[in-house]
Image (tube, rainbow, N blue to C red; front, side):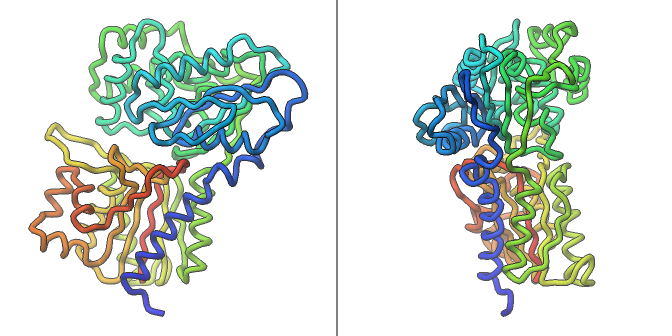
Length: 425
């Protein structure tokens, strides 16, 4: 059967849905739980866009265990729970509820004993959702730094290195507060490389970064911190817990970008496509990634290399969008990638693409991503719009809204970062 537009679009949306399903906490969490505790309390804490549904999945798996605790999730991401408190807060810039939630988690784990068990449920978004300012700084200080980091092009590892040193909870401080209780962290990874210390800024994981590194990052990106933040970053004596200092804490991944990509590849084969997974940790500027992927897609189309069509190029990770001084339009890293890909392909026949964030939010708008078709540029130009101007102005959401090709899912309640698929027929 030939690959027409309707078939290609349906396949790409099916690939995105397969990635989300592979990381559904209700399907994967129970298999990773530790043995049920026989004595002591069981305290549940957590943060992230999946924290509430992870808590509900834990309640379903352990109906006979007295569970208590608190998790913090993004507004609109709460689900009903019976025993575990859910607080909703702001993402990507923290708010008062982010501060209240972080304080509540610290309160939950304080004063525990060696017979107690803490289960920490962590997923993408926890860095903003658990905003407990360190001594000497305010929530407003943290909000200002967060906004600057989001705009400057820093990658997630760099951003979190700074966040850890401005926090009372990140960088292993939550686990330190829980000692001597056993701490078991179950995590959904949304970061390139699946580094436990980067997911949610590692509240239960020893921290390898230092105040000196945080200061260097602030300087590298030209961020001017408030006097309070500058003073905090100068406090080398108040370092985060380092490797070897949290022997009571352990960490387990329950879903990762590569797990999702493998599920997507399996789905692609069923659909009649040969998949090539290019990697789960691709980083860099979104528009540059679009140019690069366009070259690979053309090679498949013209030369049958590195594989013959019908094929699909799959990748994950997290690109960045560096904003200039000029006002930016509405967009996110996935739709910016697709817009750059569209410009580079210039309407090449036989190539469709999809890119989306598996949490359902690309950037700050309620858009998960979009689908690109061979005729997308022509349809946009027929509306009197200039794709190159929109790319320069970071207005990719408006671009795909104009063509009706946005993917809008609402909160998916999971997050294994971005999924990109380029279909060459």
